[in-house]
Length: 373
Image (cartoon, rainbow, N blue to C red; front, side, top):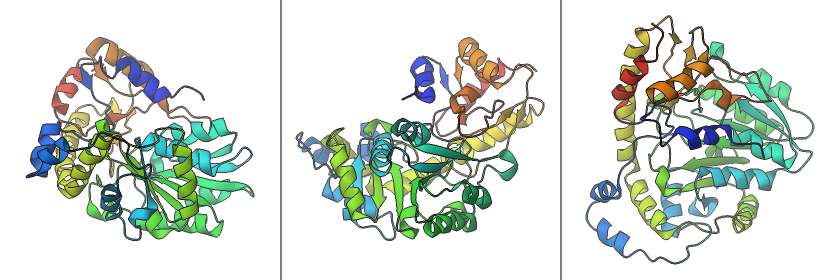
C-alpha cells in the first residue's frame, strides 16, 4: 500500500513538536484518573485482571456495554478490535474483492481509500465541498454508483472537516444504499462530540440492515492508548468472517485494555460531557483567534468532532505555512498534502487543526509567531 501520509507526517513531528495543535482525539486521562472516576472496586478490578488470552470477539461484559450504546444491536452483534484501524482494515479485506467498485466521500481518513485501493477495487470519490458546509449531495452519490458497486464508505462527524449531515440527508444516504443493496461502512468514531444534541445522527447499523458501524475509545472518549475499537453489524455471517480474519492479526485484545475499557464505558456519558465542555471552550478561543486574522484565515465552526479544516489565505500557501510553523515555532498542524487524493479534488489551502485537548491557548500564542501580519 502507498504510505499513510498522515501517519508518516506524525512519525516525523508528533512527539517532537512542542505544540500538538492537530490532535484528533479528546483529552485523555492517566490510569489513576480513570480509576478515581470508576470509583470503589476499580483498583482491585485492575489488579485482579488475568493476563492471559481473551476471546477474539472481545470480553462478554465489554461487548454488552458497547451494545448498550445502540438501539437495535445485541452484544452478539459486536466484534472488538485493536483500535479502529484494525476494524476498518478487516472490514475492507472481508467485504471487497478485486474488480469491485466502491464510493468514498473525500476528504477523508486515508485508510478508507488506500486499503480498498490495495485490494484492487475501483473507487469513485464524492467530494465534500465547503460551499455545501462539507456535506455530501445525494444526487452525486447516486451518480457515482455503478452496476458493480458493493460499498459506500462514510465518516460523520467528518475527519477533517467536522461536518455532520442533517438527519434528512443522512436518511437519504441510507435509502440510496438500501435501494441499490449496498453495504454502508460508517466511521462513527467522533459520535458523542456533537456541538448540539440535535446534530447527533442515528448510528448506521441501528437504521440499516447492511451497515457496519465503526467506533473506538480513542476519539470522543479520549483513550487512544487503550487501542480498543469495535464494529457493530446486524449480519451474523459477515461478523463471523471478520472474526476469522482477525485471527491473522491481533487475535485478541489485551486483557488490561478490556478491563480499563469497561471502566470507560461504564462512565461514558460523564466522559463525553467533560470532553464536550472542553471542546466548546476551545472553540470559543479559536473563534476569537481567527477573528483577529480575517485576512489570513477563513474559519467556520465545525458541527462535531474535535478537528476542523480552515482555509489559509496567506500568499505562501497552506503547505508552506504548516511546514514553516512546525520547523520554526514548534506548532504542529496537518498540511493539505496529507489529504491529497486520487478520487476527488484536493484542497490545497486547507489545513487541519485540533481542539480536543487542554492548553490550546499556549499553542495559539506560539502560532502567532509564525503569522505574516
